[in-house]
Each structure stands twice: as structure tokens, then as C-alpha cells.
Length: 371
Image: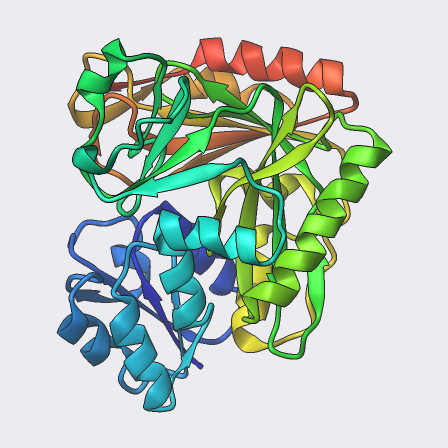
């Protein structure tokens, strides 16, 4: 098959690395000629937000998918009309890529998500709005960008004057993620629920832990959410549903990504099959893969150090390589900058306590700096 992917970042790169064990042609559209996926794909330089570029790229492909949701959904809809298979569907991408439509989707289908209001800009700000609240830009948010907490009137000076969702703040006990795969045959497979630990300064995922430390009631709530979402989205695809567990034991959907996700990276070594294998099977409408857990597994993001921009240098990897059941994944990015995701490290362990201890230890071993 000729498989086209919009976006050539690290998610595309790892998808291709997995897919290379099969016999397909993988095409990438990305604006950067040195993107992580360029050297291992049939590469086209172009803008995945540009209608004409996406339409031209999709012509002649058997299936077109995405590794970033900020793409031209109108062009994908036109490709569907012309008979090109698009996974996930253009409609599901258009719904998820706009936070306002995404929140309205949850409300319509009775999927629990924090209460919200929508505004078109600062002049539209509701006088009855209580503090604190979360402002999420309608479009363009990614990796913690486009989201901020407005705590009081003083913080309103930072309010973004743009279409946004204003969301009630949740008293969070844990941040969780579940990845669900749906193929065209209607088969559904869910990865084990992972627990996410965020870096408070960067607002990025720091550690990922699987399996998560949650009770059966929480698992039942998440299962109900997955079932509702899978029916409502009405599209094949791989979807990462990010969740909040509040201090009262209630589960809320934070947001959904219609693609491969950072919170599933530990599946590369921690599960019988990875999210990248699962995505391949979804695109080919093959039987979905077994997602059984091998051991306690966790992922540590490697991000650029503060104060470092330029050609990348990884310090401490030799020491990391001496650690048992520790797996390095670098993304092929030549330039680092503060907070930029440059790679990750997966670790396996026999217990949650051992895993957390080793994640912390490995984090201290390695730094991503500029030469």
C-alpha cells in the first residue's frame, strides 16, 4: 500500500521505523526537509495546513493519515470525496482540532468533561465567570502551548484575545491517558491505562507510568468513557484520550488527540505490541494487536535544557546504556532548544516503586544541551 502521513515529526518517524518490517511505501508531507521522518520515507516538502499541498500529496495514495492534528481538514474531506481513504476521518479531525467543537462533542454525547464556556475574544468575556479557570485556545495548541490558568483579575492581563474555551479548574489527583484503536471492521482494542506526571515548569509530560495506580471504580469510569467515545466518533483511527481523576474519584476527559501520542511511548518495550504497530494495523484494517503488559514500564521525555539552543549534544547516554532494561529512542532532530522534545527513554521494572526510582535516577544521568 501507499500510505501517506501528514507530518514528519518523531511520531511519524517511530511509525515508519515499525512499519519498515512490513512491505509498504510510506510517504511523508512536512514543511521541513530535515524533519525526523525525511530520511526514512518517500518525502515531499510541503505545508500540511495548505489545501492544495494536502490535496496534491493525497492523490494516488491508498490511505492518508496524520501524526499532528493541525492539518487542513477541508483538503482531507475533498480527498475522501475523491475516493482516498482518510484515517481518522476528516470530520473527526475537524472536530478534535478545534477545542470548542471538541468540548461540544463531549457535551452532546454525555462524555464527562469539565464545565465550560466559549468566547471569541476578550470583549466576549462573560462577567459572571468565576476564578480560577483554564483558558484553551480554540486552535493551534500543542505540547502544553495554548493552555493557561487564569487565577484572578490580575492574571486577566495575560488573557489571550482569541477564540477560546474557558474551562472549570479540576482538583486533580492524577492525570491519566488511555489509547484506543478502532479499525474499519469495527474492532476496538484499548491499551492499558497509563499515569502521566507533568513537568510543572514546561507543562509537558515528564514521566509516563504503566500500569496506573487506580482502583476498579476508576477503571470502570474510563471503560464507559472509551465505549461512548468509540461509538460517537464514528471513525477508524488511533485516539489518545487524556483524563483527569479528581480528588473525589470522578474521571473527566481533558482532551483527545486523533493520533499517536507521547503517553503511549512506553508501549514500545512495555507491551506485547506498541501503539505504532497498532496504528499500522488500523491503517491497513488488519486484526488489532495484543496490548498485554510485559512488566511495569515507564517513559522519560528527553527535552532541551534551559539556556541551550543550537546543534544538539546528548550527555550521559553511555551511562544510561549500562542500565538494565533501559531503551533509548532519539528523534533525529539536529537542533535543540529549551523544552523541545528530542527523544525519550523507556524503562522496565518489576514493581511500581522500582520503576519510579529508576526513572528518577536516569533523569539525573542525561542532559540535552547544545554544542
